[in-house]
Amino acid sequence: MTATRPARPAWSDDDIEAFRDLARSFLTKECAPHEERWGQQQHVDREIWNKAGELGLLCPSIPTEYGGGGGTFAHEAVMAEEQIRAMVGSLGTAVHSTIVAHYVLAYGTEEQKQRWLPRLASGELVGAIAMTEPGTGSDLQGIKTKALKSGGQYVIDGAKTFISNGGLANFIIVAAKTDPENGAKGISLIAVETDGLEGFSRGRLLKKIGQHGQDTAELFFDGVKVPVDCLLGDEEGQGFIQLMSQLPQERLVLAVGAVAAIEETLAQTLKYTKDRNAFGKTVFSFQNTRFKLAEVATTAKIARVFIDDCIQQHLAGQLDVATASMAKWWTTQMQCDVADECLQFFGGYGYMEEYPISRLYTDARIQKIYGGTNEIMKEIISRFL
Ligand SMILES: Cc1cc2nc3c(=O)[nH]c(=O)nc-3n(C[C@H](O)[C@H](O)[C@H](O)COP(=O)(O)OP(=O)(O)OC[C@H]3O[C@@H](n4cnc5c(N)ncnc54)[C@H](O)[C@@H]3O)c2cc1C
Image (cartoon, rainbow, N blue to C red):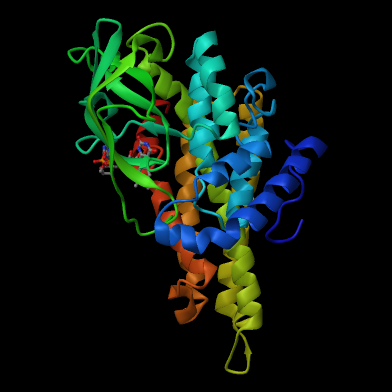
């Protein structure tokens, strides 16, 4: 192994590495050249979802009988790592494949899996998960969006914000109260296909300090009617438990991206500091640079060992809630610290958008906030102490 690139991890094999090659080729050839334009328009081109689907890059860990790739979380991890290495921050496949498709797989009835999963795998549907509202994020029990049964339908009223893939998604899992008087036990997940849906609208694409090409949006539900068979699963009131059970996988995939980002940041910084001269020698040759980068390399190594272990545990069905929370807060904190330390070595160039290090820095910041803030991660861990 080099200082920055891990050897093939123990959780990988020839099949997974072939998937990695495919993902890398697609991301570098079909996505990376458009990143700047996608950043300006604040979303990817819709067709890229279909292209990714045609190549088998969507839903790689969904069983083949539902149109997926028949792989495991290892395939999802590889996709997350390669996106970082190709510097493609715009395509929200983690939300789509690793999160949304897995809600359907885990909780959907057989009919729902057949109805939605093949279309998520092909890119006909783009997935989003809508929990957060203007008035509540961390305190999920406090959501106000309602889905009340009336005849054979749910009538949904409410507003969601900060929803990833929210601009392009046409399949949205909405966390809503089916029993508004019943706190967490009143929450259900309703799967909503939005094409041509009356009463559904999107707000503006939100302007962010990083991840510019990600379509993050507000969503509005004004008397939206969907058939009762859009309730995920067969029973109301399961939404909170369903969310809590899936969050460890969501947190793990964020941590996988964080570790890949630490490695990429180190690689770019080593290259730059070895090329750049000041006072007649390379920036790398200053003791301060070498010592700081030695520390970063140590962090990268520890993070890699930890995340590989978490991935292996998850593949064995043994990743516990506390460890997933540890992985999320610690790796994303390290990602932000490393991005800040490393950007410094680029001097003024580090602050320029044309230098990828600036994107590694700005894209990192959200990682400590979404998927449950790092403070909430520590709350969760402390419950197990
Ligand atoms: C770019 C982006 C993409 C996102 N994508 C999605 C998405 O796809 N779907 C979705 O549903 N949401 C999404 N979110 C929302 C995100 O998950 C929330 O922003 C996050 O959960 C925090 O909620 P909040 O913003 O309401 O902050 P708040 O809950 O108001 O928290 C504010 C501060 O208080 C702290 N805090 C809150 N409670 C406690 C506590 N008990 N103890 C200690 N500190 C506490 C928090 O850690 C935070 O620092 C996204 C957000 C962004 C910015």
